[in-house]
Length: 139
Image (cartoon, rainbow, N blue to C red):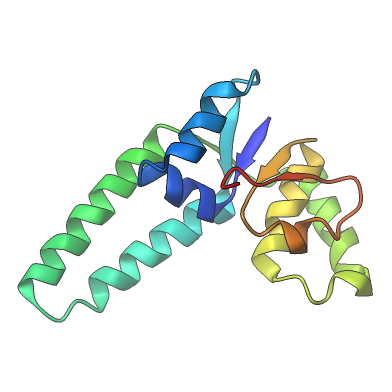
C-alpha cells in the first residue's frame, strides 16, 4: 500500500510527470491517502474560497474546490482504526518525535498501522520514525 502525502497528491492533481511516472511503475495497485490529507486539502480549498477578495477569485476558488472534491471521490481514504490510534499514542509519548509536526505524526500512525509506504517530499521528518517506509516521487 502506498499512502500519498498532501504534497504528492497536489503534484499528482497538477499532472506532475514524475509523480505520474512513479504511480504507473508501482506494482501495488492500492494507492490511497489518509483522512489527514483529505482534511488538509479541503481546508486549503475552503480557506481560499473564504479569503477571495473578488468575484473572479471566488469563481476560481469554487472551481478548485469542485475539482478537489472530484479527485477525493476517486481515491481511497484511510481513516484511523484501533491499530493507528495505538501507534499515535505510542509516537506522541516518545520525546524523540516532539519536533515532528502533529499532522505528520497522524499520517505516520496510519501508515505504520497499515504497513504502508508514505510517499512524500518531506522525507526528513518521517524517516525519524523507525520501521516506517518513506519514499519521494519528486526525485
